[in-house]
Image 1 (cartoon, rainbow, N blue to C red):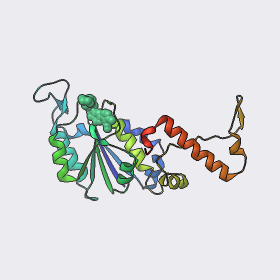
Image 2 (image 1 turned 180 degrees about the vertical axis):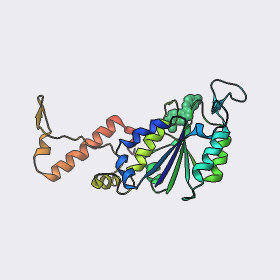
Image 3 (image 1 turned 90 degrees about the horizontal axis):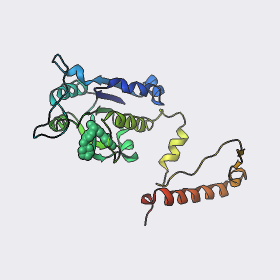
Length: 229
Ligand code: JEK
């Protein structure tokens, strides 16, 4: 999979090198290219923002640098790309979205800042690829970069061969929408706290039943929205 990221803070994405995706990048399964939006400006101050038409607070990203950046990163013709713009006004990015995007040969991420990007950029991008406006969740970030880091990590670990332990992905794909059961490791007694004895019993049926019960209890307590009525 090829991934292009456009941002005015390209060095934020240096962190991708040290996450689990570093290995995937070295092996060639993931080919990530980060671009500085300011490289697509032509004025002496490398301006990327301006005041909003109609008035209001804050600044809006100008369309011209975005048009040139999108032309440049979609020009390679790997395939018709999926072009993602993180946005507080987007559809929710979920595990299902990550699965869907993990099969795309070419993803482009456009990271906005300030109050966002001139709306015409999304319309223009739709001529170059399949545009998705996606939100990480219902809180306000200062820009798209942190959202893209999360999305690239969620998508990247689903690409076959990227995760170190493929068993964990098989387990995930069989998931039932409940929260996970609690995990324990050695020592069996730590600071007067015991590991639940059933996990030391060697009774695999009892372990499975206990874990399922824990999943249900935790989901009811913490995420009742995930349970059917
Ligand atoms: C992309 C710029 C910052 C800040 C104004 C007024 C109510 C805010 C944009 N889950 C997510 N939260 N935030 C983002 C995100 C934020 C971004 C950009 C993504 C580009 N910003 C910003 C304030 C406002 N709004 C009405 C909401 C807009 C995000 C994701 N993904």
